Image (cartoon, rainbow, N blue to C red; front, side, top):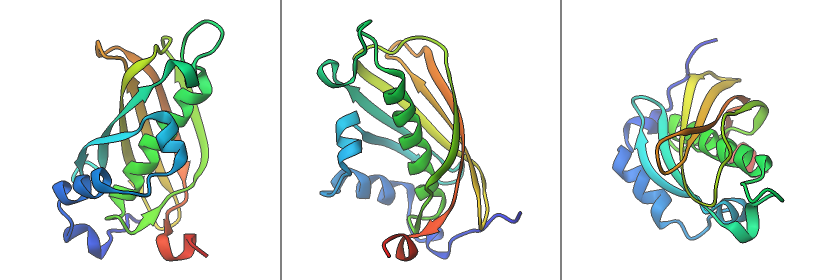
Length: 156
């Protein structure tokens, strides 16, 4: 499998991509529910840092911890956004499969997410994600497989 570099990837700076995310008026409702915010972009490393504002009234299980499915959604969001960055903002990458390991319970409040593309190919992308609590403790890790899909094909 050959890595595919997007021609547009060289024209957008990390700062330009970050600004694009921060000024969007069309944030998906799932991202809004999770309290998603882009923090940093690193195209050279094909990685992103994101933040989630985990609201107690929306995301908690009966033990007053963030329900695991929401942590999975946060990991999926971080890895998916890393795919968009890796494509030079020319593609999305729907998730084919994802494996998650939970290391400690998540609490309401700010959660830091790191998404990274390990391998970007024409037909498949391999991703990794991590979530951290405000003290820097690792909450959950995931690996995923996604299908790079140009925006034009995705919208049809």
